[in-house]
Image (tube, rainbow, N blue to C red):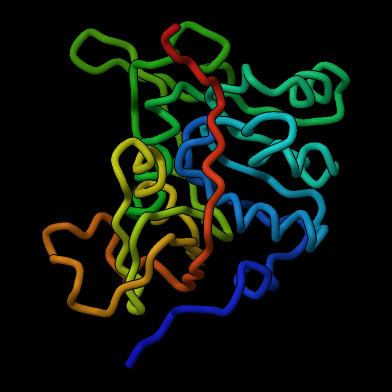
Length: 230
């Protein structure tokens, strides 16, 4: 039987080398592959390009890789919660490519679907469109965006089986399904491992054909902005 489960997060990422491009799931701190990121910190790979909606916070998520200077370039949509990101960017230490949020999701999806490029109206007439091809369709201007294909994708799911089928939970689904398909090698961390057949086929969010390695790991699930009633 196919068994994609590996023993640890460290084993799952051990072949990621300097200069790799990583497509990382998550939104804020919700649904991020925190154990895989922690393992990359320990692996100490350098000059990474990270494609992700955001860069975590200063001491958690991708922010940890920024703290240890392991990231050369970020392709992101929102980075407002990370002071170290801001410091490195303004200091010229970090290359940044900003991308509208919906466009970033579609670039991941397109890369995973084998679509090299597409046209979107988002960003036309702004700095986002600088240096990119533009074209008119039906009287409206569009910007050409390239699909994204990374060396690896890192995602976090709720459940998975040994075949690699994944189920995400509620808002933790966010960018993970698109990110999972956009890497040549997809590595997933899951909270719960079940046997093949226990996940209803209609409930599978990412089919196992896209997933190459799976690790079962407990997650901390930190809250980025805690808001409570008095």
